Image (cartoon, rainbow, N blue to C red; front, side, top):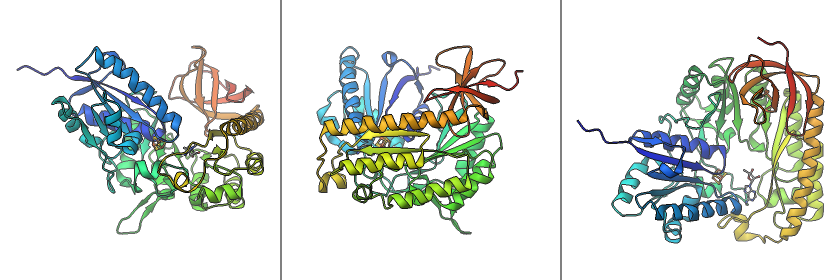
Amino acid sequence: MLRMKSKKLYIETYGCQMNFSDSEIVVSVMQGRDYQITRDAREADVIFINTCSIRDNAEQRVWKRLRELKAHKKHNPGLRIGVLGCMAERLKMRLLEEEHAVDLIAGPDAYRSLPELLSAAASGQKGANVLLSEEETYAEISPVKYNSNGVSAFISIMRGCENFCSYCVVPFTRGKERSRDPETIVEEAAALFRKGYREITLLGQNVNSYHWAQEDGPVRFPELIERVALVDSALRVRFATSHPRDVSDELLQAIARNHNLCKAIHLPVQSGSPAMLKLMNRKYDPEWYMNRIRAIREHIPDCAISTDIITGFCNETEEDHGATLSIMDRVGYDHAFMFKYSERPGTLAARHFNDNVPEKVKSQRLQEIIAKQRELSLKSNQKDVGKVFEVLVESFSRKSKAHLSGRNSQNKVIVFPKKGYKPGDYVEVKITGCTPATLLGEPLEAD
Ligand code: 5AD
Ligand code: SF4
């Protein structure tokens, strides 16, 4: 019997960890229909671009890539191009109208329909599914780790966001919050551990809102994370992202009592100014946020704290900006992601406020914030010199094959001489030096 040659799929992902995790679901759906993943776009029959809308520059990168692919398609008329994810959801049919090389679009809840959309595209129709769902969690689809280091993996535990921070497009692109059955999450973690993975990150736009209703009372995030920690004490568990409003003492206690629940919390502050936080609809003020920081320090003294900061939001004054620099000092962040405000059409801020901080001022403030964080990261790393950490090895160091790179529980990158170790090993490493971004060390004993 003649067997049809399988087709080749190339997928490119922009944006957050959640999007990378979604691409693994997409690959699983497509493999079920006899598509094989390729790392070479030139040999692909189908190219999917999984997109991000969080800031305008994220979208501009995708438009640029689509123009490149249009040229590629001219020489390769059988090629099908699909745009997936947040941009597909935000722009809907406009995307198909404005970019003629695109054959199909699929929003974040429409990945099961990709094979049908492709069949439609094959017969010359443009396919679109941008329906958002109140139930879809892809719970039973086993993600394909097509781009993995074999050590760390993501597990998506909930989807959507209903916080409606005034600047943010996510509630519009990813829809209502819904949580995934805890049994399927624990099973996925156990299966990954059996395959050799040693670290998983539980993902959601707002993981602390995790809520699974069942007869004997709901499962909430602290309980879920402890169940996952019980899979094996050699499996490290992380999570992202938390809203400061939802970081309960119960969660902090769970992290404190489980060695393998990592001592690192990402707690986006966005701004240190009460006026900005109000305008952003963050539902806390700086004092409330600092109170959560104190709770973290009290329950988990060795916890690393990282954050996200937006600079140049509507009406932001020099004084507001000063308050952000000041809260950075007060917390002493170990790491931060820092952004200029980018107005997103349809959001509360775009409809009601004025994007009135000049671009030059935004850039200046961003530079000041980046410089401040560099100082804080260096200080935090210098404090670690002389300490010994358990490092989970992830890969070879980027700079040298004689060195390995891994992370400690605090999520800091540690580079050390390879000796007899390999990815997936836990190694006790003594820190001997640092840069603002990396700790350098020596293994306590070689094999
Ligand atoms: N402009 C700039 N940064 C933004 N973020 C979210 N929306 C915007 C926007 N419109 C940042 C926030 C969030 C992170 C994922 O991206 O800091 O925590
Ligand atoms: Fe980008 Fe947000 Fe969508 Fe992730 S959820 S891809 S960060 S817009």
